[in-house]
Image 1 (spheres, rainbow over the protein chains, first blue to last red):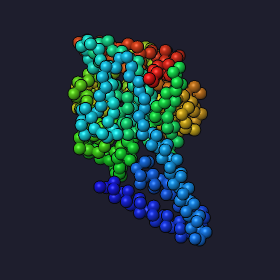
Image 2 (tube, rainbow over the protein chains, first blue to last red):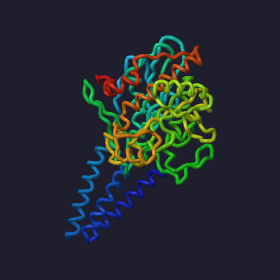
Image 3 (tube, each protein chain N blue to C red):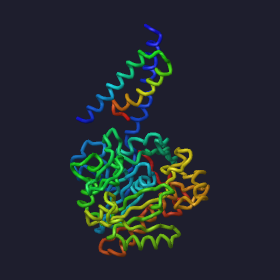
Image 4 (spheres, chains in turn red, brown):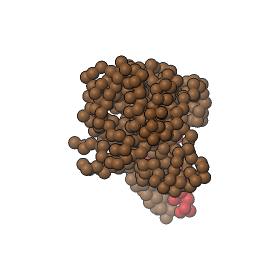
Amino acid sequence: MLTIIYRLIILFVTILIVWDMFKEKNFWSQLTGAIVIVPFILRMLMIK
Amino acid sequence: MKKNQKIAIGLIIFSFLIATVASVSFIEKWKSDTIVKGPGVTKIAHLSDYFPDLKGEYSDSTIYFLESNKPGGTAFILGGTHPNEPASMLCAVLFIENATVEKGRIIVIPQANLSGFSHNDPQEASPQYLYFTTPNGVRKFRYGSRATNPIHQWPDPDIYINQFGQSLSGSDNRNLNRGYPGNPSGNFTEKICYAIMEFIRKEECDLSIDLHEASPEYPVINAIVAHEEAGDLASMAVMDLQMENLEYNLEMSPPTFHGLTHREWGDYSDTLAILMESANASQGRLRGRTDEALALTGKDKMYVKAAQLGKLYVPYDKNGHPIEERVGRHITAIGMLINDFNMLYPEKTIECTSIPSYPEINEKGYSSYLKEVK
């Protein structure tokens, strides 16, 4: 159960970052968001 | 669509591409290593045969039995407690693929913490695999992490309080060698410990040897650590090894340092518990460039410098400490322990052949002892 909640939290944060990437006008901030979501995707899928 | 939104879409696609490429690499590491059943292997079992809760779990390690048809004692060799200590697993593999037991039996678990082999520690730049070129092709083995994979066991507490009430670092929650004697209803790692303890008890292992490596700056290195019940045996073996020009430190298992094999194996079973260490630069904190070559050769300028400054507990020069030396030390020490065990307990003799000597493995190389995969 705790792991499911954990993965949902990661999904929520990932969505927030993606949402911010769409609102952000600074390219480097968008790139930072793109880099940050990579480990989030991997952990959400329990690959790494 | 605005320009920044198009850029965001492009970057998200880029992120998914990176994640996909990384996923392929990470998922590839979940695949089992190939270990060839040697001529002496008579039976294969799994930890779940001793603790059914592990059935279907990634942690269900394979157990190799090398049995003779003559009654005698039982020696148990455990490799891969820490998958970033390659000589441990590779020594066990060498036994499985080469040894023939003439009296008694030897049982080998080459990869105790299978979960640890399925990943690497972040930010350590560890190699994912070790490759050995043999006359029959290339063999590869995983180089893993010291601890259980977080995708199998999460979260780490801030402080891990083991079943003895001792406080350890939170990440030791996933360290197999802090979880003994194990707990059938404990965490993922503690269950593996419990399964191994059940195996030792049910198979009535007379002598149990846990193989490790240590960083050159760690004081317990090139050492045999023995439970007090195994003190006489370990003392004899150290002296015999010194006569073979192999220097070993003899350490007695501290009675109050709980969770480790050399303590709990001896306290919770009738086995003579031994732990051995060899020198591994690739897990050290003073190392330079980290790659497969470092893991296999131990050659490292930083460690040579550290040795000159007197910071190490093993001699270190430009020749490093190659895998042949480290596996050779483990094999030779195991042989000495078995020989001395036979002297102390002649009614439980264990005899084993087809294992290379220390000079042989150093001369011919580890690859020479890996069998063809058919």
